[in-house]
Image 1 (tube, rainbow, N blue to C red):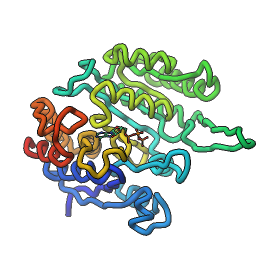
Image 2: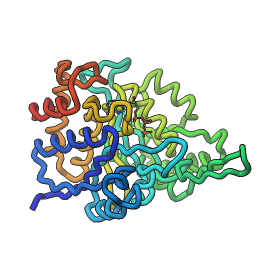
Image 3: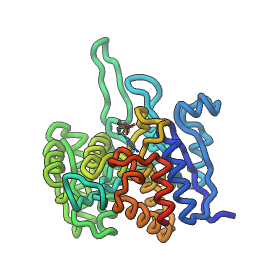
Length: 338
Ligand code: ATP
């Protein structure tokens, strides 16, 4: 019997390519694992014959095995089904998205020494998807903030900061305009800081100014705490500071289960061409391994990809990093260094 059973959602777009690369690296590093492969997205209906883009078989597998590695799933723009990624987070109560953004040796960017972690509330805000047409030509979108979810995510961020000896938690908000919803987020963060984690440094910034500060000097930022939509936008902004979407991993953490996935989407523009960088999902796999206590294997993979990056050989780096390697060339280069 393998030691671990892990759910694998290949996803669509570049999902199957990057998830197969991540799977190969994790197996080559020595994880004893049985993968339970389940579908999500349009593919679940078109290729697997389910009646739903997020079938019960997928949700039940994650509920049963608690841990999943997930490739991206395409969300139709302006029409069609509700985002599978959002549904998954809401249905499984994966309330915290944790996205470490770090400079990597060998990847040249404007800044060195970036080391931030975005903690994004993952279940409410504008992502409730409650939209209405009041009358033709007038539509609304409902932003929801509950005291329970705001307090829970603040507790997660402060606990995370304390456990990992981080310097500071900074809340990004727009409570000057959204006085009730972002006001609730801010008040809950302040309360959790004062009552439970006074030893962790805390500050807050209005999100527009926060974005400016991020691009002026990201090394001044540490743990960034924010509501759902801001977390989505700031994650991509931060990815741009350290080399792009190909190098930023993520996890979605709930009380009962956790789903590890890269920050990037399904990148339809490069899907099926072997051009995608699988590093972000490999790094998400490393987060997953640490989460399940396989820290030695996690470290081994991390050391290997860092060596590949530091070597900087064009034939082992993908195109987004200035190289010529395919998705699987990169995976093989990491495996060769294990
Ligand atoms: P979503 O909203 O679903 O998260 P997105 O709008 O952030 O998606 P992506 O699909 O992530 O968009 O793609 C944004 C850009 O980044 C595209 O040009 C895409 O090719 C590029 N990109 C995303 N992921 C990767 C990757 N792993 N390797 C190389 N390029 C990538």
